[in-house]
Length: 324
Image (cartoon, rainbow, N blue to C red):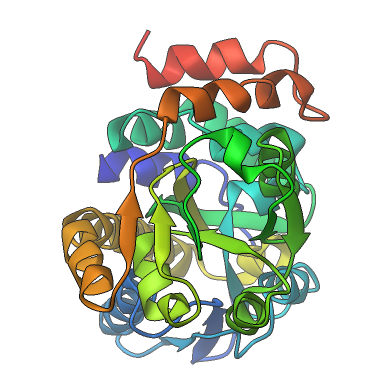
């Protein structure tokens, strides 16, 4: 799979002028805790890039929003700073609307379907369109896991979410999904979620189990409803103008190692799900299995109503992920 991912990512790399400086320093930022698989895999990427370039390229990893919010890192990158940001389909849809479908509710049945989509010709097309907005997708195979809802109560059916204030990240895919579920989506940056849940500014939040545990949201709420509403894939973007200035060998190494890092992070995410559940149970969290067909039915309109989607996109994506 790695060779195909490298081909997709490198197909769009521009042969620009080489950077003259001997040392290239790139800062990468995300909003997650240092204990998360995303951060651990990013550190491994930084180590391997430094080794493969004999110290010519140094990647500095900044967790916990030290470089600002996700939006902050994207804008820094678009302006030409040597910065990479952690991104998902919801944020990417603000640059290329069709990419919203990758983050849509209950789209994927398994991780293999996600792999088919991110190694497809369609993904190449999307990256070309992203580049026109000033960003370049270095890799997009970092499986972030299934997202679930944490609150002080359970939500066995979508009807139980009616009127519930649910924290969502400030991107349109999450907002539209939770509107369809009858909830009131409240957009907050991740750094604000703990206090918002604790103080009752929101009634619920949603995230993968790894993030619920690492962020200690269980201190404010003890009930997790296992909706798995998104099987979320994430990746890394860099400014396209800056990407063009990097030597070709550096671009290739960065592409290969971020794809390799995505494979590592994805394995960690899958393998650690049981571990994170046990850790949450150990601190008093109760898990509830909801009516998943009802949840999927409630969000089906997402694929017809989300603004800006190409008319035949849903059918095309389903053919890709089903291997047809």
